[in-house]
Length: 319
Image (cartoon, rainbow, N blue to C red; front, side):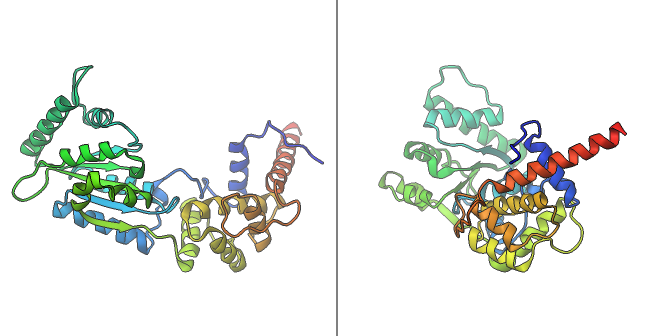
């Protein structure tokens, strides 16, 4: 049995399988890239809710969703949409004590503060910056917090105090919280009941529906440079939906592995067999099927094919 060759990096393997399918780049990367956004129904509703709420001058807006439903991608798309009309700060990991979070916000806006600044002093500096920004540029400040379900209760309460600034018409600072459903439980805590009352708009992101999943897969392939009809057979897509539940992150993982499986066999069509192998090799797949010896066969077949291609290329160069 051929042993894995460490000389072939993961990057080289991905490049080789991309070339096999006529792709310019990896279509199912887990890195949130707004270029690949597919505006399915739930996503469009969430984005419109955010834009309407911000235009209305609401103080707090909340978007929740299960792991892998596209919250971070939505957050980045919102920030791209707002730039120029709002002054936006993005805090990707708000699991911070109140003072540390305030310094992170100050750093985002380039606000100077003493090394040993106290929380009260920093709040005053931030308040002055917010007022001056609106007076000079008529820009409302928007703070976007990803992974907000991890934010300590005391830190959430500091955000409430920061949001107190307003004119007779609107808030001078608006705060958008993106988080898993656990965020709702956190907001139910009696200590921050005032904050929960200030949330004017909220929405829960949903997974893809079956028809949306088929379009989502094709959309990402086309953005990556694929031309022609879908390489995924209808049975493969049906199995992909059942195994992922429509969760985008799982769809990406399984679609990527099934492409690798097809490439490893020299196939250009992704069948139910390739998808079964991808599912068997993925711990978090919802619908598990574990035929004997499927696990690890994907990467082994990819390495075998890669070695053959590299050997052929070397022979041609040498000749």
